[in-house]
Length: 401
View 1 (cartoon, rainbow, N blue to C red):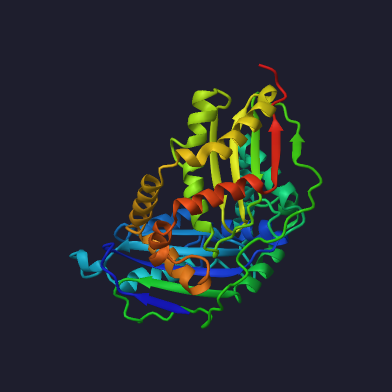
View 2: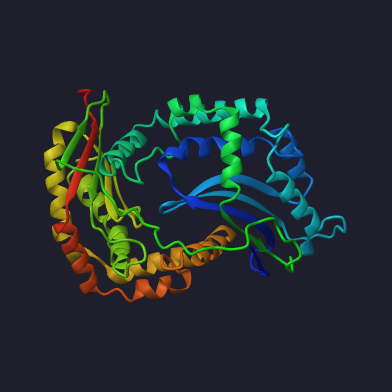
């Protein structure tokens, strides 16, 4: 299905294609490998260097292939944008050129009814290097430990880039067969600019709204503190509060404000108390995962301070509501939200959500919903946070300083 939006707001034109499918943890590695392959070549431009040269021939033309997640759905994204030809005094620079280059770049290199072997091996090498690099970051390992344990054997239990052992087993035949399969998944193409419905991209002509966007299931948890030994100077804490408030629920809006106050801003309440006043951590943040129905506090500490840190965080959650400046936080969140919609990417993401995830997020009503939150709503959110199950995941810290 194609969507045409004639808008002059950005002085650029763009074409974005999404292939949308339900997450399958068993397919994360092969999907990541496919994205790696699609980035390296196309049917007309056989190498990365060819792609770069082709993009340089147009005015500020940029092309990317990436993987995105929206809750329990995964998307392969092809995106191109360039300066709108109406602002360029060059008769040879047209929308036709932009469209044709996008189409060429988003069509993979296929040789004798399979993928190109050299490109396949290079894609495998690149993905392996990325996975190994990510595995070196201890904060990433700590978060992976927390999510894997909390969502064990559920739809949410996967490594974002895949697994090295699985990657080594994937053959070129496997990857091409997978591409053939996902090519039949639901997809949509958005045209921003004066395209006038002229370019009917080869996409499936329907979209079904996704009403199972959230990760509802949890793993079987038999304790509230999980320790993972690792030789590091710092202990990495991930504290998950199982609030069970999900995207699409009106109760999520007080938690958006609560999270901003607690640890979601540059000078948050937890930062002021746990780091600056008590000196108990190196850094501290919080994140609200609406699709997963959890709020997670992240920090790095000395192992010997573990129990004291947990007690102080609970004090902050118990007492924090009396220090919140609700009007100031609303103002900061709404200004940030409005500013983001000056960017083409955010505008397109909103269009996608309206088509695929209509009951999850509506940018038009977001500011109104935020401003409707009362102090009583915030108090209830703090009470709820204090009462839900809290599971702490402590990674490393086994080197004494």
